[in-house]
Length: 415
Image (cartoon, rainbow, N blue to C red; front, side, top):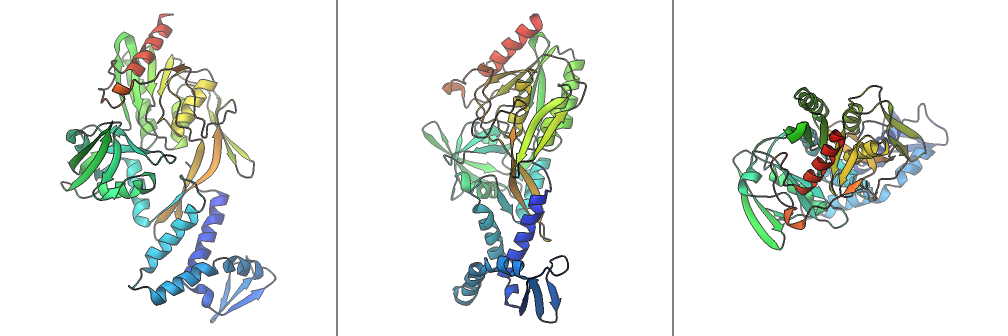
């Protein structure tokens, strides 16, 4: 993800015009000109607004929306909330893109999104991966010391219901909103585990998300689990990496399994710790221009093995794809999720709303496409079905995928 672009500025202007229409600005007396007035902004004199013909033609596209609002204002059986209608119109505009990664945030949702990025909130302590093809929402992580862990919710459980809400990919944000709330209040959570439906009553508590965790394995192999590219993850990752090296680590295993991605810049910062100057990823925009992310000169020369799985997505795929293409690490696990597009997160308007918009597709250093395809590991090893939902302790080598990565890493430092 990134911040503002030229394309996003144009979209913000379009949304402002939409808001003008929906609040009946179009009902003002209007003069139409064939030429551009000033910098093309509407010019107001008394009760008259002068706009260019091009602006008028653009506004006319939203006549039906204005008509809908007028009908609702006149006939709806209850007093409508104008702001809720405007929020719904903005959501609907972006929904029309048919892109699961593009959506509108109300001011409350936008504020919560940034709080999530910082990793401190009151809730139950689970991370959920939504599959927008099947609609299934799978719990990909249960945070340490969380109410969900204490209640017995497992990684791999499918989230079915939160209170009275049926949970699918399109209702997941609503489910998350319900699971947030006051500390010491309760929420009902229903999951599907294999063929068994399980119900839990979970107390909400203050959650502090740890984005990174690490430990030393036997034979001087360091292990770092990077759970998400959010918050202070790149700074914490570097600190824990340096600590492992100071303790004598001769090689590192980086675990990106179930990492849904996050900020591209954080993926580049982690790559920069291990690779000399060169490409990390190329972003390609609709107009054809490209933006290259690169590492700088200088890096830690230590054997690397990287673990991925079917839930490793977005920035996780950028990092693992760069390591693979540039021959810097051995990638172990199963094919990744296949989210090869990048979003901007932008403020909208003046009341604290926001949006997320897909703006570019990315490619690995060798030009490989990732979207819908994923990254195929160098060494493929499936997680046995009977172990898929197990809650392993950090660095537990009974985890068959980690054990394979460990054995390969041991071979590297033994050569």
